[in-house]
Every structure is written in C-alpha cells, then in structure tokens.
Amino acid sequence: RYDVLIVGAGHGGAQAALMLGQKKFRGTVALRGDEREPPYERPPLSKDYLSGEKTFERILIRPAAFWGERDVALLLDRRVTAVDPAAHTGTLSDESTIGYGTLIWATGGSPRRLSCPGHDLVGVHGVRTRADVDRMMDELPGVTNVVVIGGGYIGLEAAAVLTKFGKKVTVLEALDRVLARVAGEPLSRFYEAEHRAHGVDVRLGAKVDGLVGFQPIGEDEPARVTGVHMADGEVLPAEMVIVGIGIVPAVEPLLAAGAEGGNGVAVDAQCRTSLPDIFAIGDCAAHANDFARGDTIRLESVQNANDQATLVAKTIMGADAVYHAVPWFWSNQYDLRLQTVGLSTGFDQAIVRGTPETRSFSIVYLRDGKVIALDCVNAVKDYVQGKALVVGGIAAPVESLADPAIPLKSLAA
Ligand code: FAD
Image (cartoon, rainbow, N blue to C red):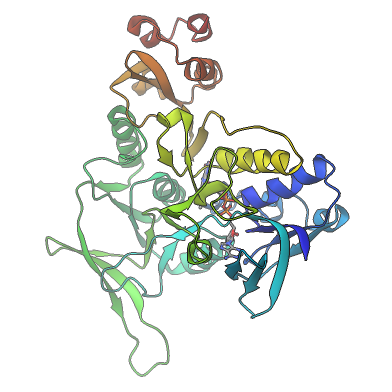
C-alpha cells in the first residue's frame, strides 16, 4: 500500500510525483505506468524525436535513476484495470492488487481509431507513445507514400517531418479546413498554404471509405496497408497511414467504479473526482475551465497536465487552492513555431496582427470585445505580452491589436 498512488507515468503523473517531493511529502509515493519507459515528454514524438533530432534519452522528463533516488517507486509495464474505491485498491493487468491512501488518476488517453474497413492493417499508426513512433520509424525506409488522416496538430507535425524525409505525404481532413477545432480560419489557411508549399497534398472535405491492404500469399504475415479508398472512388497509394483524429480518455476503470463522467472523468476545481480520495488530472480530467466561460472541457496540453498535477500535490499537502491556470500550447511545423495562449473556442472576432506572408504574425481572438486568446506564429513577443491581455480579459481597440508596431504590453494596462 502506498500513501499516494499515481496511475499513469506520463506528464501529469511525473509532475505530481515531482511536486510531492518538492513539497516534502513524507508518505510513500508510487508512480504506476503501463508503458515500458520511465516518464518522457510526449510532444517531441511528432516533432524532433520522429525527425531523429532528439534521442530518447533527451526526451526523458528525468534521468531513469532519478525516481529511485527521490524515493518514488516507479512501477512500469502494467495497467491498472480496475479500482475498488471502498477498499482503496487497484487491480493490475497481472491480477495483482495495489493499495492506496490517495489515488491520482493521470492516464491520458489512447488514439481514437478509425472504424472503417482496414483500420487494423499493419502500417496504420496512431501517435501517442514512444512505441508507436519507434514502429513508424522502423517501417519508414520501405515507405514512399504516407497518408495522414486528420488535419490536427499531431497529423500536421508528422506531415512536416515526413515531407522533410522526402516522403510523398497526403493529409486528409474531413472538415473544410485544418485545425478547425482549435483555431480560427486565418491560421488554418496559413498552415494549409505552408504545407502545400512544402509539397504536401492537403485535401479538405475528404471522406475515407476504407483502407486497402495486401495479404502476402502463402506467407504467415499479416496484411499490410497499401492504400486509402476515398468515398469518390479514388484510391490513394499509402504504405503508411497515420491516424490523428483525437484521443479517447483512459477512464474506463474509474467510470466502472462509479465515478461521474463520460468523455473523461468529471473533476471539481481541486481535481477531485466523485469517488473518495481519488483525483484525476491531465488529458483525462473533464473540468470547468475559467478560460472556456466555465464550460466543462478536457484540455490536452502539457501545461494543463503539469498545472493540475501541481494543484493536486498542493491540495494533498493541505493547501486550499483551485485550478485557474491560463491555457497555453505550442506546435512546431517546418521552421514555424506556433505558440497559443488562452482558448479561442467561442470567439466572435479574429484579428490578424501582422502579415502572414512574412511568416511572423499573430491572431488575436475576441469575444464581446475582450481578448480571449492569441495564436502567435514566429512571434514570441506577442505570445509573452499577450498573456496579460487574456488573463485580464482586456478590451483593446481593434486597430491597435492589428498593428504590430504597437506592443501588446502597452495595451494591457
Ligand atoms: P500522458 O502524458 O499521456 O500520460 C498518461 C500515461 O498513463 C501514459 O503513459 C499511458 O500509457 C498511461 N496509462 C493509461 N492508462 C493506464 C492504466 N490504466 N494504468 C497505468 N497506466 C496507464 N501538448 C502540448 O502542450 N504541446 C505540444 O506540442 C504537444 N504535442 C503533442 C504531440 C504528440 C504526438 C502527442 C501524443 C501529444 C502532444 N501534446 C502536446 C499533448 C500532451 O502530450 C498531453 O496533453 C500530455 O501528455 C498529457 O499528460 P497526461 O499525464 O494527461 O497523459
């Protein structure tokens, strides 16, 4: 039995363990993960780990030996499959049980899978873990054509890297623009143009009927993907298909134990679930977010996982704090560094600040005349200074926001 059992050794779980150590928590702490590796950073998986610019050792959150030195029991390679809130125990995939005083559920999610025929062919990949990306990298030498299904950040980042490798990449987006769920139209159009300029075939309003494969005759090998069958009859050649259509939060054991939730597990302002002594943090935690007008959302970002982990560690140590962190996020594609602050969903005006043609500009999102978010492309200053506008919900004149010669910090006062 551990005083604090953290389930999920990813960003949120690692940060919770780090913060408990930093706050001098005196009890026993275990970090229980289902992957083989010690906690590592996930964002590089579709960026500089995939491109080979960073080795796996360089994306570890702490060196492997660190956890033992800090008295965190790092337990890997087993899933928690069930939770008994009354007994304060979890059941593991090897049928053993593990007891806890307080449970922190930090399990993230797994890539949403396609439901069409061929979705399970060899060569079809989700991008969530190191193992996923290592499998992709192993296959890449034999691949000429890659089809990316889903024009979200992960799909676009992977497309950028694989294009650089000389692969022929097609991005299929079902909606009428990429990044439709997370950004305004000017940003979508900018990224579509960038990808096309780099040779990516970006197709919007694309409907996939199924994936087609090849079954080696007389061989004991599984069928491999060879193409993507479009609804209009076209078959796109593809020796590799990357599916980036979102995640399914990994909350089944908690819901089965009676926790409130559905799309994620419901948590309050201190990240407590409806079950006693069980917190949930990170991608799997559905919380009311002040920057989303109090709507209940799940945020899929390192910032959110780290901030919720920090809050829970403080709460366990007796502090009386609530979650009120300004959301931020980044994405690297080609030589473009996008940094976002705030949440743009629900905006009623999007102001372009600067000229996208210069490849350094920002988009300022307003609702009811107040700044709610910024997307900054190669515009670090706007990102740094714009945060205060979002936090303060500042109403600034549109002409000033649109003029890059006027520093955003001068509008924050
Ligand atoms: P995770 O980091 O996913 O950790 C959850 C861990 O729990 C995993 O190891 C999982 O295998 C494990 N687990 C699941 N179920 C169980 C179980 N039952 N028992 C035991 N263990 C379990 N965010 C950004 O802010 N910026 C970016 O640029 C960015 N890029 C990204 C690129 C990629 C390719 C991906 C996949 C994500 C990216 N993200 C980015 C999102 C960010 O990585 C996540 O928001 C963050 O990892 C969430 O942390 P978490 O602790 O909630 O989940």
